[in-house]
Image 1 (cartoon, helix red, strand yellow):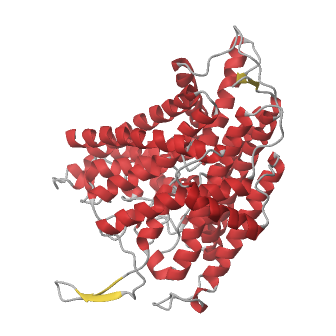
Image 2: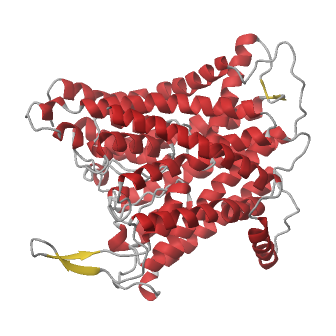
Image 3: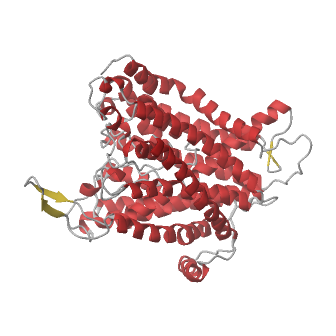
Length: 568
């Protein structure tokens, strides 16, 4: 336990030490200031604009920005769908893998376009090298860049005054890819290769094991996808077992590095916000609230997993009560940290099977997705979702003190409240609960669960929470590759992505048009410890009121059954 605590402290220290300068760097990139990469990326950026006809100097209002974002992503989804269904005719397919079934291809195309990376398939037996590289990896870059662009538009809406312009989507997209993700992924992929992660185009290798059995070993361009999978908070693995596979995550060092890279851009973006708002304390407050929730959630997961299952302990099998579903290479500490980070950050990567987590461990994973992944969250997505909770918090505080709510000197009025409520409460809750309710009474759905009773219900709720939250991780106990799940989960992913981004951009557009009112004696300070506590409380309160019945019927009941010695 002492070693685990030391690793956790080291993790947080390194994360903050890396994210602070990186956030300052991103602020320069998106404010148009000069950076050390300009001589390399500047000419390439100009060439892209010339080829595509983009006027980089023309900014957009929120409607044009949203339209460009949605159309671009839908076009990417269509291209990825076509790539999968035609992969048997395309190059770099040494295993002659056939076309992907239409329902699965649709689900996967939506999944990678929405930054969800839900995988109802085994990558090494379903996707060719060409599909993995030209389809899935490309969408990993573009979906992450789209989320980052939406967050930047919101930051501009918060910090600008009396204007309809919140930036240019095409510029934000291009600069996100060229200045942020490509350089990071290039260096990161080289480190992964040095550690033993695969990166080749070789045919699958047939080897003879020590037992004398013939075994086929999958090859492929893994490291290049692994880098953006983590830094873009995507999560889609090259192999079926994701980051539990030794070719994706071979050592304890790569495990630590992968967990660190998941949070790098989301934490850096909070620092970026402080710089662009010209008040670093605003960024510190947001980060403090996120980290407070994360530390408490991690504590619950780690404690629960260390305690393990008393029913297995009673069998007297040493270590089995805590290591089920976990890699020996990573242990309980590395597995608990990874599981908490990946569900906090809307990253579907896993190094342990969440189906084997204790009920309380599974509850935290579920709750973090249900809350809208605001505990740092995905690239851009976590930040803008948390900002919607800030809108709700200042509104509640305004009601308490009898004053029109304000944030950064701008009044929060009816339109902002409606859009914020739609973004973080109405759409996520309705989609998760309604889809889960339908699935529990549908034969095709219930037949796909590997467990009955409370745990089976948790498997279903987890799937739709993961889809709506654009997380992509699974309990690993649900056979989701059937037409029912492929279709309904794809719709849930679309709702979870655009049903949040569009209201967020509407809020950005509305706030950008407002004047900034100087702070007065009655202005509630949003840089205080009290505000951090209030913000955290509002997030948890909304989550509890909305999802407690579902959590009570699933993991809470299962935890009580486990403590009473009941099995199913």
